[in-house]
Length: 292
Image 1 (tube, rainbow, N blue to C red):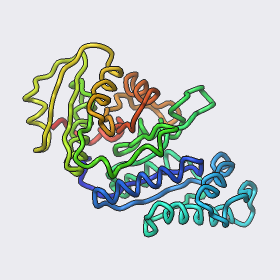
Image 2: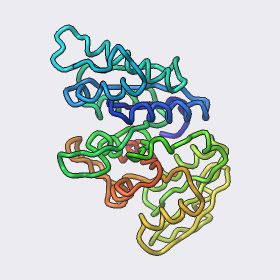
Image 3: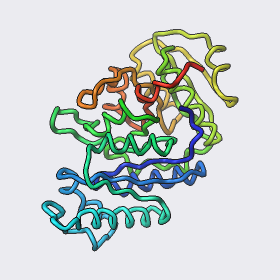
Image 4: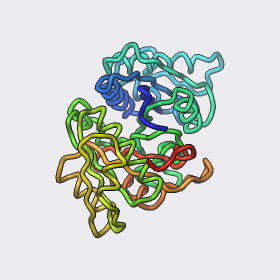
């Protein structure tokens, strides 16, 4: 799959970060001339936090209501009202909105993105208290491993600082080790950089690749390649910080069952210590992919 589509899927769970995630997605869709589709999957866990996002945008139809145990399907209507108000607050009143009344959130969002041939999925990373993962969360980590398209992960607490309007003309950073996932991540990052009228910095740590091979394999835009020694996560962050890159792209090496996705150690560590959005190329999206 390449970055030929123009649909951005934003997955929200009704938490306090939801308004910012929709705002980020709406501005990114506007920036690239794409379409925004916002999705929410109802369930016991999401119902407990749904009123938080509603209150943040002043949605009287949802704020303060208890969606648990609703026998008449009012929970779905209230969630739809919340999505409507989130989109209006984000300046995207015409964005398509989807409320799934049941199902596994990660699986539902992934299938929706596949059906729409989405450009990417925007999702927030939040604590998963089941396994002590402080920054990723079960739904976002599973999407990062198993989604059919790139997943833009927004670090918790940094949502308000992410301003896609400032991404135009900037340099994106992509981690690269010569593997199929890294080739695909580089190609997708180059496609996004091209849409943003920007450039791409491809950084390999440990594994040296011929610069000419990397540059010639990517779309015609300003591509720079450099090789570094050291810890991959630390070096990627150093490069990104030095050029104030808006995001880091990386491939996910593992592909596991939904209950136990395998992101690969570098991808997981980068997500856990992220200081900026991370564009993850999930292993599942590589099934029909080929090296450029």
